[in-house]
Image: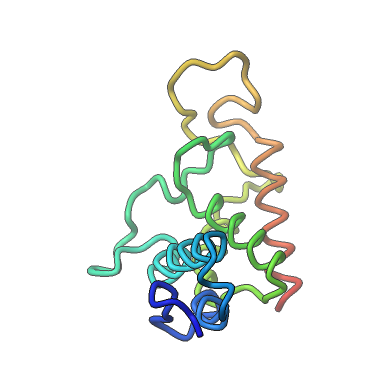
Amino acid sequence: MPSAACSPTSSSPATRRCATAGTAARSTSSNGACSRHRGEEYLLERRLAYRLSTGEVVGSFVTDFVYPNRHRYSALAALDHFRDAALQAGTPPDPRLAEAIEMVRAARHADGTWHQGRTLEGRRWFDIDAPEGQPSRWLTFLALRVLQWWDAAR
């Protein structure tokens, strides 16, 4: 029987995993997993990019891809998380990711790369990736990895 904190609020794969966690759901690690699933569901309800109340994009930062992203949220960073989580759980991509996938596709440049967004301010010992506005090997790698995962499941 799932713990009260792990009760599903929808029929998404993430909340079903919490609901079926059984006795293990009472352990600290499973409660942490259920917290993660609730956070994932929060983002999925909003299709990773939109306000639930108005349906508007939450901000331009959602499609401003940057590497390293540190603390900055973007559709690409969220999709990479959902890819990792789905591969670990052995589940297919959630259909509610489709609009975020299209945001990633739309950011692809004619040369097949994704360009570095506005880099984050702050001290850094050395630059890891391309300067702002230039093709980014890391962003291209992440975007292609997410798109290949999505397309392979279709």
